[in-house]
Length: 178
Image (tube, rainbow, N blue to C red; front, side, top):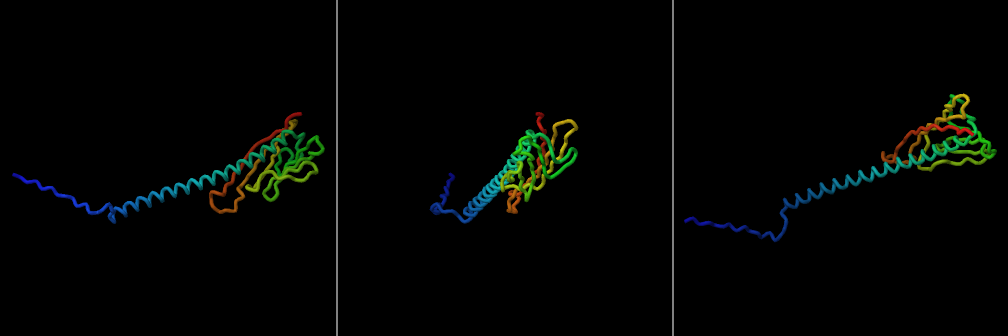
């Protein structure tokens, strides 16, 4: 007859890890930490970039809307003359307190001046206007139309890519017939 011998496994480890098990667990933990850390860094970087882009878009939209509103309500366009472009815009109004209304850029800030009043800055210190162009695209015997080109950058002094963004915006505004 055959005798079967059962080998008894020796479990004298008392629940401790072997060195190889420890190295495997530690390597897996290090890889997971690295992956999660890089994902968090990417998320924060993208969030910063998105906030910078939103700031630029919001400031540009506000400036363009304000200029367009003034053009809509103006009596006529003083400067630039039809077919010409300029870095400032002069609008004529029937209201003496608003005549003339000027839009111009100085040191990266857009200013509006109504009549003899002091200039008022349009926008925030988070952005810099790098270029503005007003082109009079009016046809003869029409109230007037202005094409506005606005280039705006973030004003961050940080050299990291996610803090730097620039964009150019375009719109056309016409004087509403009175």
